[in-house]
Length: 530
Image (cartoon, rainbow, N blue to C red):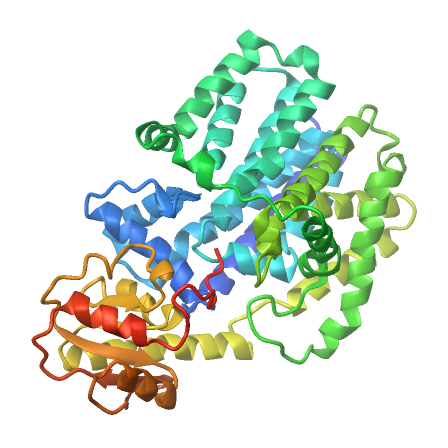
């Protein structure tokens, strides 16, 4: 039996376990103490899907027919145990956020047959860029999207290195199928994985040993999507992808990708909030950290043998990472979401797998020559990331926690005044649906943002109405245009309301008047960030 001191791989595996524990701690600290999510309405909508599932409605999609409701099924089970709260909604993203680095470690180890490179790469997924971490801690389907993406890459790499065993091709198909149902963003990893197997490992990809079990697995993973589309004439295929405007539109999106989206992923600060002063540590480390990522990508694309010269055949592994980078960027540039207003970094999150693996290769290459320089290189990147996180003691987190307390005051106000439904702007009112357990129906005046049809199914006698807003003057003007008497009163810190007196008019007719009188056009994009 070999002594552990003679087995360097064992030491790297031990280091990887320690890193994974630290990663779980980071993600728990990101979610707790609980607080109001910045994209609160969109995030709580996953909870509304879970409530629908608990009520017996086996929904297939979370958003239109575009994003699958996979995450909502896990929330529904947890709601039965712990109740429907923001705290419960945070459990699934934490679990996914802990599993992704573990699977990523297995992926890089299979890809380069190196525990050392895998461990170095793991560092940068345990402590990822601020933008990556911020978008994957929210209950909004992105945690599952990145988990399924990296799982597909790992299983493809496993088949390439070890050959097809009894379960891996089937598991690969399940992962691809679940990803297809959950989000088309997983294509950024699915397409490269399949192309890489076919192009570089054709002998391993036989019909009997790989394609047949993978197809069966895909049918299992994508079953909800397949059943839905068989019933509704493949509606998802016609509505789930909008191409970018050709010509100048594509060029503009390409420039946006290089100048804005990629920069935000690698070196962005405060990804979920408004502009704020950059801390001295962030300011000092931001440029060196960004240069380190650029150097790592140059090494990956231009000179991978510097890091892998003692690993024959590793060039094929580099090819997979290059394919992922090219595919994710191409999908972004050629699709309409890349041209949409608002943050777009969420559409290219799988690119961080390429960046983390590249950084791992860079640190491994440098460590062969000077371990201290390699340590300082990793410290600069990780230090920048840690300095940009929304830790519980930061100003942003304290404000978000206060906003959650304000929401509790709002619910108490509405309940004490017998309010049964509210109307207002999407971001202001829609969270009330989840926070009240759907006891109070909240309808936005923008029809396109009433995702789950609370306005369409409003009973004729829905009960007492309250207009809800943030600005007293705007709310009063809206009520006056709608012919609704009453004066704005404070409902909670940051909220004002106009309580409706007794009214014999049917609720749908009142809602129609309110929508017609709203100053903002009902199809205005006021912040929904799916």
